[in-house]
Length: 287
Ligand code: SAM
Image (cartoon, rainbow, N blue to C red; front, side, top):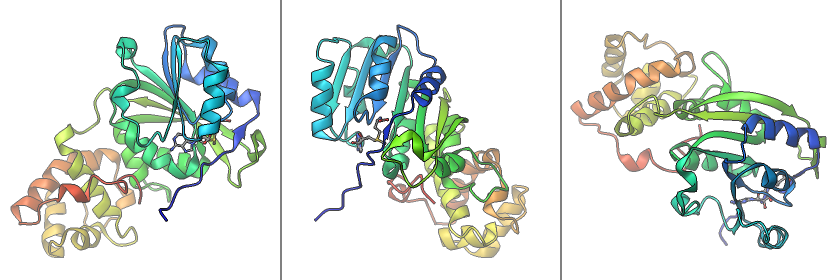
């Protein structure tokens, strides 16, 4: 039997949280919006009169059918039954609706937050996203150097977007209440990620290598990860004005950006090239 992640069906019931999400999304009557995991449609219902085009994707067949029924008279609303992780993004807005940047919203199923972000962050069609996610994950996405929660997820999200905390949300805002705290965050997607597309694999390889053994020094961790000799890695780091005795979480996003391309060259020159399939997989955004 294949493992299926739980559907994460905790339905919002607090109208103030809905209001905050709507305000944070800065909607206009011309807005094209995508909602991920509408559930019973509390957010959907609020979005319908406020946007020009709305597409929602819901995995639960019964809930999707109910929503199709409920919004069948709204020609600007499309309910897509299916797994968001499997939908072809380019098919969601077949007409030229998406000419102006789209907004993405969702009270997400927490177990698949990372793969959802991995899927949307490289998609250039949107500019603003407002998401209700687990607070601990929101903290990881927003955190910076020196924080225990700073890691691959922080670097991955911040490479592509600016992240803001909008609201902390208690379990009582949902029915049934989840066991964890939640938070609304807003993402402003950067027009261009901080590294060019061809350098993204080496950015992730470097970040994974640095954080692979987060208690070890950068010299040690990158050497274990890449197979390169520790001395060679330490010398390379020194050449880049990075102290090899530092730990991964003390470097800034800007340091990882600055080092990415040079790291790929260094690896290649020493016969330890980056295997692309080690970088582009669903583990990319997790520590
Ligand atoms: N947005 C609703 C609300 O606030 O009440 C429901 C939120 S609930 C946390 C997550 C929703 O995502 C559920 O309706 C669940 O069925 C749906 N879902 C779970 N996995 C999904 C997937 N892979 N693709 C699309 N929807 C999914």
